[in-house]
Structure formats: C-alpha cells, structure tokens
Length: 450
Picture 1 (cartoon, rainbow, N blue to C red):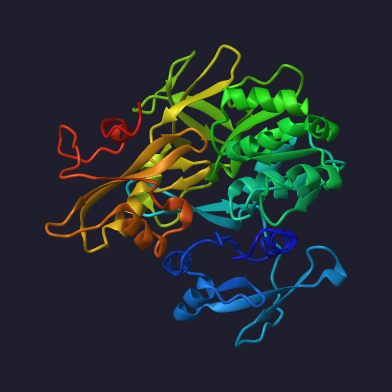
Picture 2: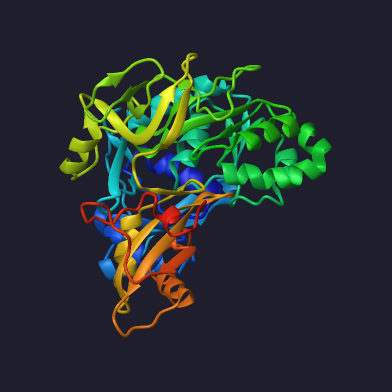
C-alpha cells in the first residue's frame, strides 16, 4: 500500500521477482483493507515510512507483519530499504520464479458475489508486455509519463512492466494532475503516455488553450484504455497533439490488453477498440457457440496473457470459462476489417471512468445502515465519467435519512469513488417479471436518464 511514485514502481518490479504481490488502493477505508488482507491471507504489508493511516490499523488488528519502505535516493531514483516492525528480516535461499509462478494478484468486482481474486502468472505479465510492445512498437528509446495509479492493471502492465521489458524508461508521477501535465511532459521529453478517457478530457481542456505547447511535445502516440473513449475526444486528441491516438481494450483477467488499434497513419478507428493483439478473440452466443461475420454477442478471449482462473471460486470459473475461452461479460462485434466494437456490458459492473464498482458491494454496505430496509445500486450515465453510481433506497418504517446522511455513512465504509452520487428514496423498488430487482435500466425507469 504505497502512493504513486518511483518507490512504488521499483517495489513492484523488485518484489514480484520473489514474492506474490498485491498492490492496494491507498484510498481504501480500514474496513476495506481488513477485507483484502483477510481475503488475500497476506503475510506482510508494505507501508510508507511514517504512515499511520487505516492500512496500518487494519494490519495491526489482524497481526499482519508490517514492512516499512524508506526511500534511499542516494542509491538512485526509486531506491528503497525495507525494515520490519517488531521482527527481523533475514535472508533466505529463494529460487527465481518460473513462468508458472504467481507474480501479481488483483481483485475484480463481481455482480453476484464479493470481489473475485485474479491471480496473474509471470507468463501472463510477460505475454501482455510483448503484446503491448508490438501494438505500440515500443523501443528502448521510448519515455513514458505515468499518470495511472500503480494499484491498477493499466498502470502496472501497460506502462510499467511493458516499458521495463524493453529497457525503456518511465517517469512515475505522484498521481495525475491535469494542471501540471503539459509542463511535466515537456520537461521529461516523453514520447507517449497512456490514460483513461476522463484523464484525456481533462488534459484537452488545457491543451486546447496551449496548442503550440501541445504540438511541441512531438508525441509519438497517445494511448487510451480501461473505458470507452468517445469519438469526439479521439478526434480532439488527434488534432491537438498531432499524433496517433491508440484505443485499446483490456481487463484484469487478461493482464490488461486484449485488442488494440494498430499504430500507423489512418489505421485507427474512432469508437472501435482495435484488432486482436496475439490473444485470440471471438464472439459467442449465450450457449457458447462461436459466431461469425459481424454478429453481435459476448466477447471471449484465450491466450498466454489470460489468468488460469479465479482463486477459490469454482462457481465463477465455471461461468466465466467455456472450452478454454474466457467470457468477458462485454457485448460486441467485429466489423469487416476485423476491428472490435464494444456495444455494451452484459455484466452489471459500474465503470466510473475506469474505476470498477461492484453494485452488490455497495448494496451490502448500505444495508448495514439501521434506517435502510432495501437498496439496489446501479449505473447512471454520466457525460464525463461514462457512468456514475446510483442507489435506490427504501427506508424502514418510521426511520428518517436523507442523501447527505447516507453519503456520510458510506464515506466511513467505502472508498470515495464507490459512494453513490445519485440517491433516490422510494416506497418500493421496481422489480422484474420474476420478482427480482433489476439494476439494468433502473436509471431510466427512475427518470435519471433520457
């Protein structure tokens, strides 16, 4: 649990060679840290020197070994030393990992269960790095400005691991700052950067007012992933920065990239997530039959970059894998040129600007409030973020609660990006024909969307 920066990057690259790593979002609450430490059966947690926040409290309550990371800039940028609290670290004879060993574990939210554990092998990461390298034609002369969080698959693999695999370089910022981006990019003389659509939109607001500065960066490419890039934003980026805009399609279970628009003049299609980039990609119907032509169905993948399966979750593995193909839960089709277009999500996960929110997780937290009798969390379309979090709430008889009070309660149990922006209080939540609560389409039924 470290903030963005060179030490976090160096710690991931170093530790993943010897132990299984699981980077966590520093913005989690103590309850969330406790859940993840327990779920991962963590042997130790790496915290910044001097840190005394909720991750420390969670680790101490569980008796988890705390390792303190102290920067040692005298040995180079990103240099660090680890010390253990209340224990002595000793050397051990440990073999370097082979390609079948776990390197990285991340959680991905599910719609019908708690977050699922996604193990990624050394071979998964290296395969994904090779695929991204080929798509972007990276060389050791490339220099990237990382603005993505390093607890997320996008920043860890698309930027950091891929660049390191080619001997390229990365400037690891402390986090995305749209006001500083153009100056940082200029000072670092970067050749590319990768971000989510909301980041690109924020950058454009300033770049359009400083067109000469934007063009003066002479970027080789701009990459976008983790959420759909609106075609209008694609066009503006292309015009303002005068370089190819490469939209890619990725997810945690695939060690990030599955498809990507190719590099080269005129080879990118706005609104499409590109062509298959080594992992095989097909379209299936609900019965597992592969569809041909431009038929629409579920996007499925297989390849060396795909996780072997969720840990300790046979039900999820059974529903997510069909004859060796991983079912993404996304709906789409290929056009005549082999470019993939995502048309919707079969899953109910809320994609808030690339941050994935499990509706059931939010439901479970809000249901703990004594004034709430029933709640269903759902996605609401949002112009900037793509989707926002909404919640329909039925109060218990005789109880009172307003939106501000509900959000205040949620803030003590959930990370900020999971807190509902749209809250509707109802006498009864609309149900489907079978009596089940339906998340999909609820925003429209409640008048929150056109």
